[in-house]
Image (cartoon, rainbow, N blue to C red; front, side, top):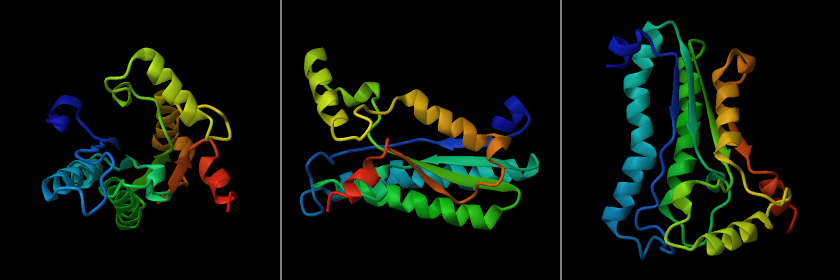
Length: 185
């Protein structure tokens, strides 16, 4: 369908995440169905897009893949078991694809910290949301959370020729939180 509609595929951005059954559940508490669902969305979806997108990219003369991962691939939150597992696996998949399909296709990952997205607000009132977000922002050296546009700008850079020598990297975009947290010990 992509080839019929657009004629070629040169860029693929994988961006999917599910926290199905994840909130405050460790491996003992999470159901096998919720574990499997999260693996299917967060990891197997990326696999499928790569499996079927890469042949189209190769036929189109090459391209770039940008996988949206998470800072949780490196720093795990308590009682979040399957989500960081899937994001760490995405980072490994990124590196494997980068080696397997270079030089025709470059593959990189973006590992954001907390990003303010519409569905992160849940059923809270606007005031509660702002207070919650401000609390999170205070844990970051830049004292703010990331916007969707900031992640999109990194993806655009990685998809462009300006990043033509970047391949197999997992770029942390978290306002310095991972560096800051590492120095707390």
